Length: 542
Image (tube, rainbow, N blue to C red):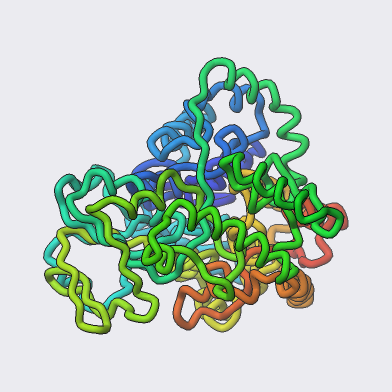
């Protein structure tokens, strides 16, 4: 690890790899580090059974280089984790990035030196780095909530969080397995392992709206089709509402009930996230529209389950929350897994898990479920969690973790007042915190950061920081936009309510990916009015 840098990138997932490439191309002395043993970020850590894309593979890609885009061929519409990880290796190798990455290296502290205008960074390997800029590419869902239940450590079998699933996997064949959690991750695990385990017990707290995935294999014709669309995708995707290739195109009030139903049926049959991200935008604002679309999805789910007990446990009820205000999972025969004789759904909504015993899972009413393996799909401290777990100290000794324990605030989701020369991606108050095709948003954010660093240096300055007024302005705009939606009224990780004590705020910017891009570009074009630049002279040595 070099001791002196222009820029240090933390993390080598989608954002970190591209940021490293850009800053290196600008001529900066830049290095990246990652706690993992290889590149991949999300796709390194989340190697649980069934992990896969639910963005179409050909849009979950970098769009800055057509040769790089066309050089990789996907095997299916929604590939699984092993293929995605290989793609990340391809990116790192094609751009020759590994020579500037330190793996198995965790950042422990980062302290801003006000007199020098630089950061002092330490790692768990004993490295001490002096760097002008720090760029946190730590991921929006990379701080797993691993210690959720009393006495977890007493369990005599294997217990794993999906976000830290072992590289070699687990031998689940013939085992009694518990899965705790039925969000997008839990659903992928459940549908995948149900046929191979002896007994699968699923603990369900919050029923989820689900959409069936259609995942055709890709051959030469499909590859030729999407590779030929590079210019179209590069032009259009960054300006859609969610960073996908499709966008909202229907207006609820202009259609008859029969026309609405026909559209819902057609989009539901697409087997993608289109029903959520490109049907009727009114579902996020109008409770009546939300309820009608929610009932449409519930109807589809009930028809597949048939069993009244399973419907009671697994299908959201009217008044719970609206379709799309939680993360919407795609699934393959997930509901049908519960129709198997070896799978049991246990509702813990009114009878919560109170303890993990050596032999299994204990509920409030005293019932104990004896199992050999526990897979916890219990989520993450989203958006703010990964950076907050590093001891980051800004001006005047202010700690980032303490700031975010009081209030979740950023400027454009890219910087934080009081923390000069610290940039972030996938952070709160930007679309990349949740509501975006991640490569679309992370490319935009890393490109903005690279431009900002270049502009700061070109101006003769070496320090940039948001103003307090600029941060207030962005938080106010973010809240006005978010609070107009039904997302703000729903308890989920989207609002931080899955983490006890976390300040409540919609984590993701809800004004749309294209709108966010335009606002970020305008700030840069206008000379960064929400920021202040300065030149700090290096202290003289004797």
